[in-house]
Length: 82
Image (cartoon, rainbow, N blue to C red; front, side, top):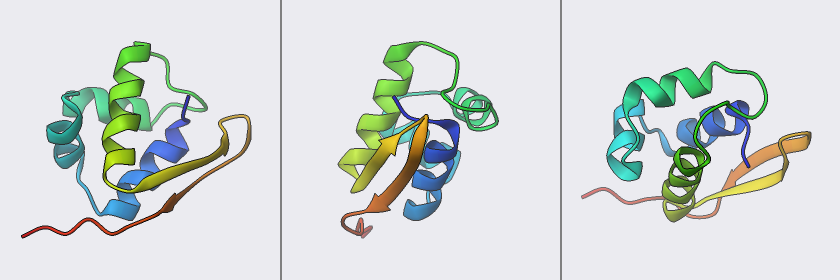
């Protein structure tokens, strides 16, 4: 799983708004915003977290570590918007 901090950091690396992530993942913006303010691994539906993680990874984000042990993110490629 991913932590709330990783979710916020991944979105920031991509310069995506909550609406951008919502469009890419199919998860509502209110749900994204709620998950981002929680501590640790956000409470919620596992399918929702997987959808968010998959959308961010498809855009080039790599999740590092684990939510409990030195979590982090890096950007493997820059998404091009035309």
